[in-house]
Length: 411
Ligand SMILES: [Cu+2]
Image (cartoon, rainbow, N blue to C red; front, top):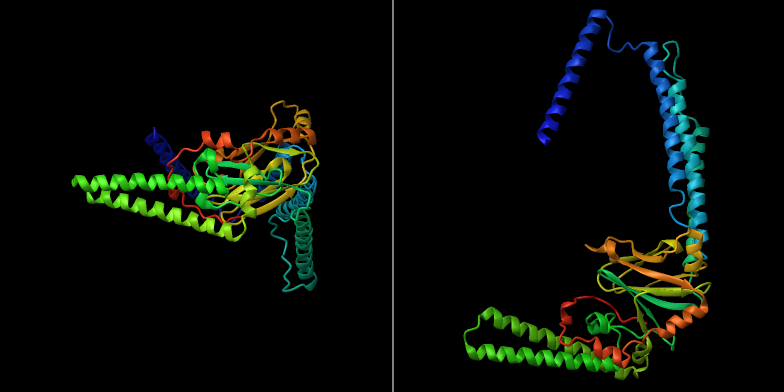
């Protein structure tokens, strides 16, 4: 099949070359020269220019019409400003686009070749230079200053009574954390990150440090026993013994790092180390409507980008560097469902930075509801390391040293 297509293409090229040759030969017979183009040809080309201009403009307008509403109305207070900024820019670009392209096509049509016309020749014109420097310069300055003002307004610090929510990203999922009744996030440390359910965020608590240490001790003992047995049998390969020694070394180093953490905690009087106990870790974000929210973004592995299209909000999540974004949701999920005439509508948080193989799958639902519903929901969420939860979801012996992540403790 491919061969057939190739054959058709080759034959077509040969045919065109042959036809051109025939045309050129006929020109010799007609005694006309190549650079002599008839007025009819020139007119046809000029008119086709205009026809093409109309097709081009119509296609542009169609695309504007077709894709103008790719997102519903902005569901956040600052979202209206973002949309306004976008509209102003788009209007400016659109007007410039039509003026410039009309001039381009119109001049080509109006000044089609005329052997009686002579071109004007001039070297320099100050007025022209002024105009084509000042007009784009002022337009650019307006766009940049207006954009910067909007950006500064949106990214100014959150007010003190904003609800804080931590959004934690890793390949390939989101986790959210609410600070609990004390309104303070427990600090996190990568040495304490443990398998999924128990401590995915590495929250530091006295209890978890003890747990983690005993789990590490157990692993060290198991590996030491395996090593002793392997040495006694005398038949094990050297590489196997070395692998076991390496593993014990890594486990002991991990333990050492946690012990150092503990020393610091004693020095620091333990206050901030207990803040994590009542934190709530959730798989769906709930927000009360018309309240200011401050998101704190963290990442475990690579740079992700938290994107909430309906709120016109986006912020990178960077490993080792918490980032922030504040916003006030203004339309509840229920209201938006009515507006969109879609009972299944949900606000979403997406990853907007290609972060790996399952990047496309990084999504979390966001529910905007009344203050009462929000409080009710929050009350139902279990606190971090509440006794029963911890016991069921802490698979012992998970080798977390393999999770090589860099993350500073953050408040
Ligand atoms: Cu991602």
